[in-house]
Length: 423
Image (cartoon, rainbow, N blue to C red; front, side, top):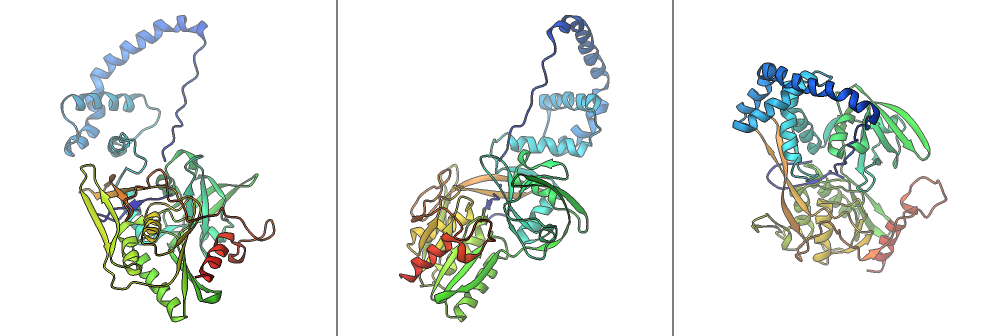
């Protein structure tokens, strides 16, 4: 799932422990080697004391230049870095080690949504938020229980579609990086890359495992799709809330109005969130005057986000949701519910009710921190519990087994149409 951002800086979703203990040595040989081990350890400390300054000075210099370490902390870091430089089986750059210190500092918060970005990662993050990036053109989600990464949408005329990727495919790995081992944000970076380069994906489709190569292209991902259904019912699907989503949403809504729309379905299923400003602007466009969401920080300071009632829309509405409706999409859903603007249909939403702020640093890097908890207009914090629909309905296809998805066979969408026909 991806995440949701505060107004301070645009933003673009859990960590898994795959640590394995080394095998226990056979007891019979321990006594034989113990003297060797003791001698080796003593030797290491002697050798280390001679060489540690030369081995770690570059990294410590960088960290000190960034005002991160001094005194005892500096000495401990020098010790660890010296051991890495001397005994780790691969060479590693000072920049990478320093980035590891920064990342580890943020990781110590034990918050899956807080993260350190080096300059390259932050640049890629900003490209994603603009809706333009080099990748394959597929929307991904991470199962919060199994950690598996699956495809929820394949955009037309993209490398993903051209290479035969399908919705519900499980991406086992990308260029050797395992999807189950990384947060979604980090894993996605293995799939994105330079234009015209290839990424090798291992895909699980049912019982079958496939290796598929995709050539990356520049992707302009649409976040809003719309069409007119029968009985003048408008349909607007929002896949995420990016910088361009508000303009695309308004354009879609106005196009449906010109076609004579009398009621509307907002499809927020599989929408993992996005920018706070974006969803607030859309709610301002739709709702009457009032607070559409508010946040509180750890000191209890409250910030309200309001609709000004300059463009209120007054037609019957339904919001479709599922377990992957998260964050900013839950803000949309909660506001529609609390304003009694429309019915909510589907299954319990994800339950992400906290706000992240991405703070750029002077060297091009950035840190993302969870800074606030958000509340629906009625004062409910949905974090960890989600939003229960007015009409609970699990998705199932109304078509034949194995039949390709169609809106006509989407039981949740058809239920929304049924509800709107009675209003």
